[in-house]
Image (cartoon, rainbow, N blue to C red; front, side):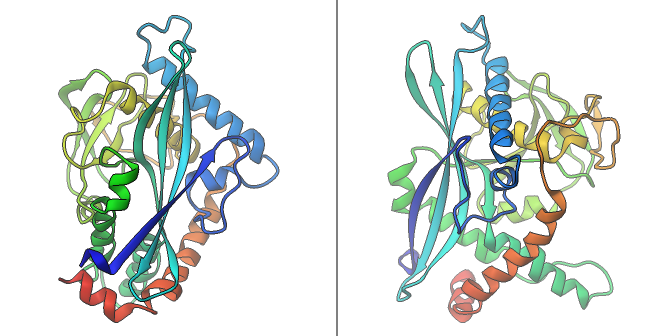
Length: 322
């Protein structure tokens, strides 16, 4: 059934000159930073934060903490259903590249990092909300996330993916504020100390349908663990520099978007529950519109419903249940 879909990839550099493409979900981290009067300074500040964090973690043979820089590409994936002339913006991820100023090398990093999907907006901001309007208590619709999960796996296993990337994706998200995380004795030289949650979350289950498992680590000098979603062996399939490129990029975004958790003034303890109402945190010098993000998620979900789900509903439903 993989012949049902054709994937195409375009790239755009994420730098201080970045302007979101028309098909980009405007709620995604990098697009939100690139809007408004402060866009150029936002981007410059975010990139500086990423580079500083990378050099702080990659401290070997780096005495002046300026050996490396991170270059970022926004990877946009369009999907086309067999027999249709229309392409739909499927997902967007980031690919990191590491610039080594000492050796003048450009080293491929990790693809994934941030994860943006119109179809995920549809699932969470349209389908899930509509379903629960009819329920006395919160519940999950039947086959929730099945289509999205299979489409993602179809892309990762496609010739298009194999032609562009040599390793599976790693997606890095914030921890959930309705779970408790317990510190373990396991410690990785780059990822840091591992945490384990008290229970599974809807996000974990959703990403599991995408073929991704999750582990939680708090890197050195971080204040809260990050969620790393991956295929295979996170600790051994990627180099230290690759992992650092993901940590530095995604921790920077989380400090901007979730300062109550990732720019908190107190470090997570042995038993940690994130708190989005935590007043004891610092604000970055970067403008981020969180209210607009929530509103746009619903609009983007309805866009997916109108332009992808409804026109191909019977076919997609049949395919996703095979």
